[in-house]
Image (cartoon, rainbow, N blue to C red; front, side, top):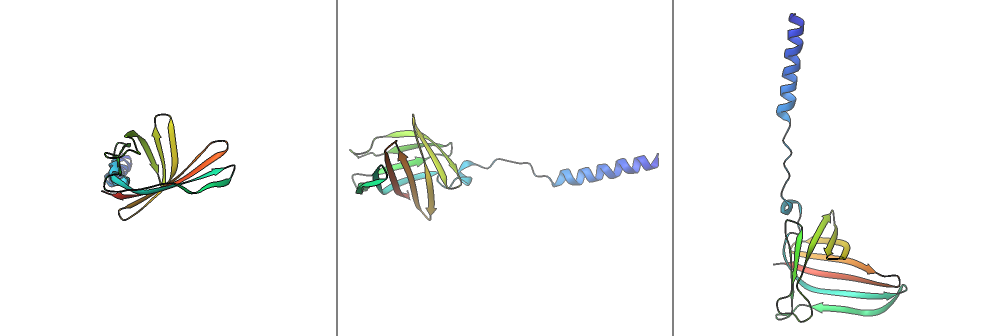
Length: 147
C-alpha cells in the first residue's frame, strides 16, 4: 500500500510541476503581429503594362502625391482597410479586407482580389502586385509612408 501511495504521490508531483510550467496560450493582438496596421499615405505608384508578354507601355501609369492630390490607406487591426483620397479626382473611396501571411498580402474589394508582396523599412511600405487577364498583365508597385 505504501508503494502505491508513493507512486501516486510521485505522479502527482510530476504532474503539478509540468502543469505549473505550462503557459496559457493567449492570442496576441493583430497590431502586434501585423506591422501593416495603421494609416499610410501613398507617395507614388507605377504600373507597367504587357500584352502577350511584350511590354506595351514602358512609362506606365503613374501617380505622384501632391498637397492637393493624395491617397491615404488605413489598415485596421480587424483586417479591414479604407482607401481614401479626400481631395483627389483620380481615386475613389474604397473599403475592403486584407490578409497578411509573412510578406504576402491579399486585398479583397467586392469581387476584386489582389495578391502581392510587401516590405516595410522604417516608416516606408512598398507593395507590389500583378494583375493578369488571358493576354494582358499589369505590374504595379506602390510606395507608402506611415502617417
